[in-house]
Length: 117
Image (cartoon, rainbow, N blue to C red; front, side, top):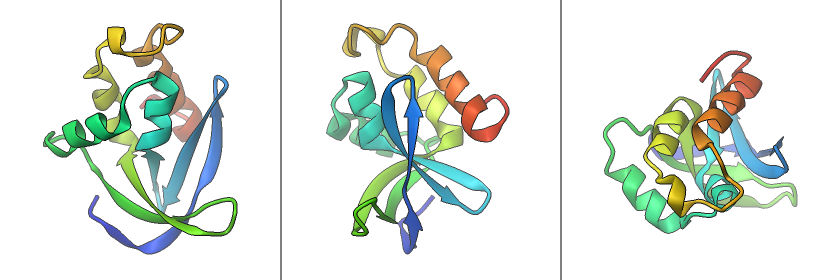
C-alpha cells in the first residue's frame, strides 16, 4: 500500500471496548496504526518505524475524512498484515489487561472480513 492520494472515510469500529479506525478501500480494509497501539498500550511511533522495516507489512499513509469532517493523514496497515504485526509485539510491552493479542486480532479479522484474518 503506497501513499494514497484519494480521500477515504474513516469508520469507527468498536472492538472489545476500544475504538479502532477502519478505512475501507475497495475490497480491502486498512486499520489505523495509532488506534491499535493505543488499544494495546504500546508506543505508536516505535511500532510505525518497525513496520516500515518489515518486508511483509503492507502499510502507508492514507488521507481520510474523520467524524468532524476534516481530512487527516493517517498511517494505516492493511488488515491482512495486522496479525503478523501483532505477533511481533512482545506481550510484556502491552497493557496489563491485554492478555492475548493474537486471539484478539483473529477475532477482529473474523468480525471485519466475515472470515479469519
